[in-house]
Image 1: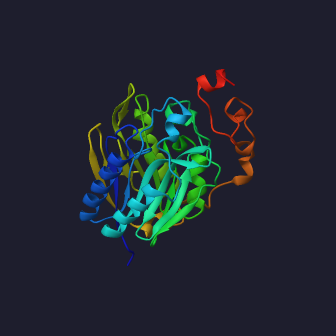
Image 2: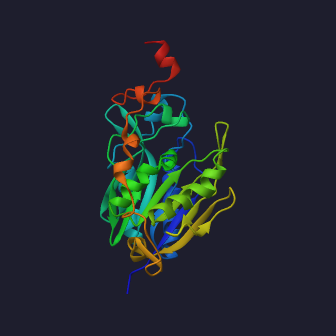
Image 3: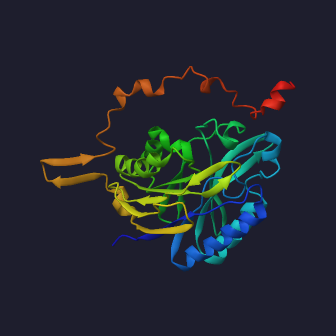
Length: 300
């Protein structure tokens, strides 16, 4: 008999540049979700810091190393609840700034992820693009892959984690208006095309003129929504996930007549163009240094 786990997606508002206040809310929401039996609780992108920073120096005032003081507090909360948490934050690595999320459990940091795909929006235009491969981490028997927001637009990232054995793809996000179709359709698509569970945790509220739309969701490997917030109010979504279901990629619908395997049926030899380097503006970014504000550039 397979073991099932309850997972939770926390849709919440975030106080701008107020790490202590946001940490306290994360602790409270984690405790609430754990009381409802959640094994893994996922929070939004930049849940500890806010998102709409105008300058690199401003963002660095609330960025922290990983591990660091914030992850120590989250570890204590996970230890007290016996749960795991994925929390969005800004990571400081020397002078480099990353839009990151961290997977924390009762024993400390399990894994980290740095956002790879960077839109010209909020802190992403100031941060260094992620420099680490897409990975899968274990929360006990449940295997989890992490992306952040815009990363979900690129199916290659999810596919790599599915190939690495992910049972669940977690997407902390800060979706603004114009992302409604992404929220409603891409999350089920990533679940279905990889036959994995897929979870998005979006924030709500308004920050420096940007409104965030909610619409968080948890999907079954068939793409069927298991829980969804079709609104922009605070909520905690819950769903049961069964790793054995996600790992059974060979789907037999009519034996010998209708069978599919989302991974084994791939034809990688036909996909060469996907790995061809992009020569546009985004590829020209210097990923070795933090991005600078317009004022810094003018003064250089």
